Length: 493
Image 1 (cartoon, rainbow, N blue to C red):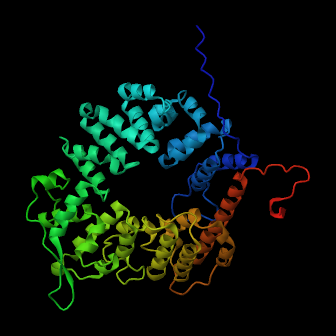
Image 2 (tube, helix red, strand yellow):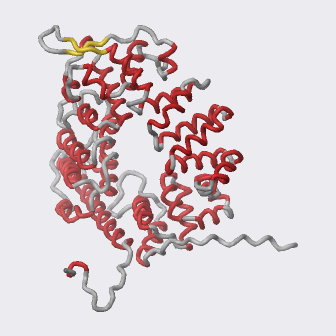
Image 3 (cartoon, rainbow, N blue to C red):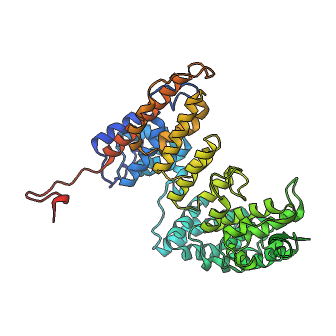
């Protein structure tokens, strides 16, 4: 038989190589494919596969190239875990795509890469950009549009506008959603035209994007409608908010993105009201309600049982517009008896509101919530806090775990929080946790053997934190050699 065609050589990876200790660590992390014990008693050994995502993030931040011999195991790990793929493929680099073309099991890497594994043209090459946009596959065109929006948003919008009338409805929807990147007032004219699109989903997406621009004409129209429904009543003993929900959903409201038909179980008028309020600029409400601050507005009573609907709509508006002042007001005090703010009707909404706050304020609020309400409801809130957790938040989590241990419950009741702590606690907390490693005296009403299980759980936590600290040290670039006679940096005058 004839010889098969030899593959082309793998492309070069110009990034610097890993330090030797970090390369050995990567081999160890990839060799542990068990993914943990899968529930129940996990023992005191760290879950190495749960440390791999953090290792990859740090390695990518330093710009290292993956060792060629590690690429097969890295691709196998990414094949089994979709959450691992973005960081793993970024670290693996161009040689991983070369390998993926030779093994069907790794074809996911080609699908996950922009343009199905093909390189995008230089965004400054107008001819190549135009050719790919006109002739490329949908995935290639979507990746090209995303790249343009991240660098030169106007060029991306102009490219989309050039073929908008001939695109399929499902493609228009996906392309339009990409305008969230770099969204600005310059996009308003295009989005206003999209409000007349024949596809309801495209119209709804355009309205959603316009309502995130407080200075847009759509936001002004929504403000007029919303202000007509909400007013300040000064006739009683104390000021109060009164609500008169819309009586109908006219054609102009539908064009601006209001969905006329409510979901099952929702009244039409409350459904329309919520959409109007969440799309109106939050900056309009102080003028409408007597010059009050967001905190003062949220504290006002709302007549006739409309408070929940009104505050929930303000929550959605604060998240959409990323308004820090309103998010703070709607969250309220973390120690409030109702376990949240006046408008946050669910933990998921509180988590979204928290995302608008700065990292330190976010951590302090969640720490206060845990101190008052414990860990049972805090899991979603912890997920939006910056990593590593700020010291007050870390202490609040550890103290709450210690309280749960003293109560005699089993540690796997808090396995989700314990797993987060292993990934998110500052490794510097390891020394403070050593006092929790001993097996405690169990109260009479404690679950049998719970103390021993807790000791194992805290041992795993401490060991994991120390391992994370060691991984960070291994990934630091080696110090450049000093010239003879040079002073160390802290000794220079």
